[in-house]
Length: 420
Image (cartoon, rainbow, N blue to C red; front, side, top):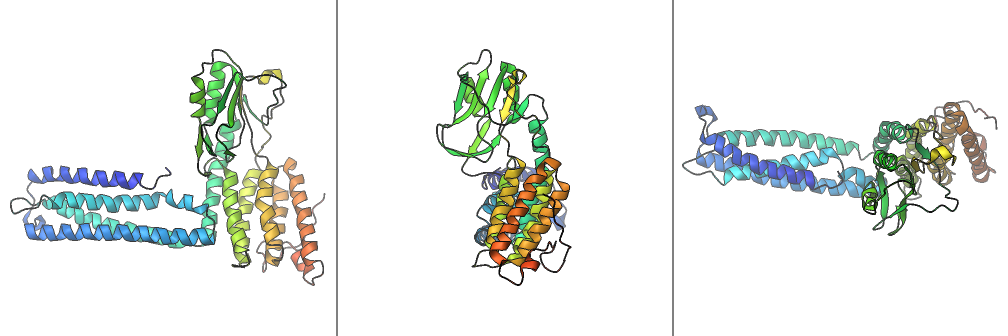
């Protein structure tokens, strides 16, 4: 859920409703004397709780704004989306606002004839829980101010979702990857975007089932993460039976457009965030190559996951038996590798530890990725050599910059030439 306000709003409404429920419960139960309060004491306690929750909510919002400012200025502007989608932040705000609403609902009913004793005790308990959760929240986000922590967070998204998403996308025999060439054939149905936006997600299962039901080939024109203008072609259907004009709206609803890319179905966006963090660290204003080396540690792990995947499965050939199902463009290994290495190599061209760590990463990838992916790794190694020649050709440190090192500097590993 992308909206920050929805869960806190639910918490506030739930707190108010539970406060009304508690009032009815308090009217029908009798608690021991040591669990009861005088009207003045209950009013004072509840008033203090309402004020404290309002102040603490404001403090959480202030902390959030400050952390976002620091994070987007130090790491990547793309990190902000991960922040306001975080469940912990939403849970803290929901609990604080819910406790405030619950306590206020009780406070307005306190008088000399009625005191919601159970509710006052519950409010006190909620305050303790809120404070504990706030401490956890603060600890969590202080740790997330470290660039490597953000990198680990983003890498985990890819490691968790990539194989599952890619398998779901290509496991069916009538799902094909590649680009469609109609060869003069007119589409049965064309679905266009109603507004501009980045493709955040595609309901591949829904599109496939629709294509099977209408016995046609559903062709998706853009990859997830692409920005499309208003009126752009999103989907075309070729062949088919009984396709009504209203089906256009149904298919359009299976493609989610938004103001920016999301990370769940877009591993390239995760790599983009990681590269942004390294680029920021390598900028002259920051000059922190060690952070770039730490990013390469986790970036190499992400590329390893992608490189071990058969990205050429169900490749579109245009045969007669491929006229039912779905055709969708899928990024290839070269696309991910180029995205993950090019900018870091260029911006870190004068940082010896970045060059050494990148060589170690590429050599490890060469050994572990699928055989058909190795030529792309060899090309990246050749580009790395060319960059080193340009940056260190007249330097006494050329030999050091050309050596692979898993730690950048300090964990020397023997240089090993990769056969072309």
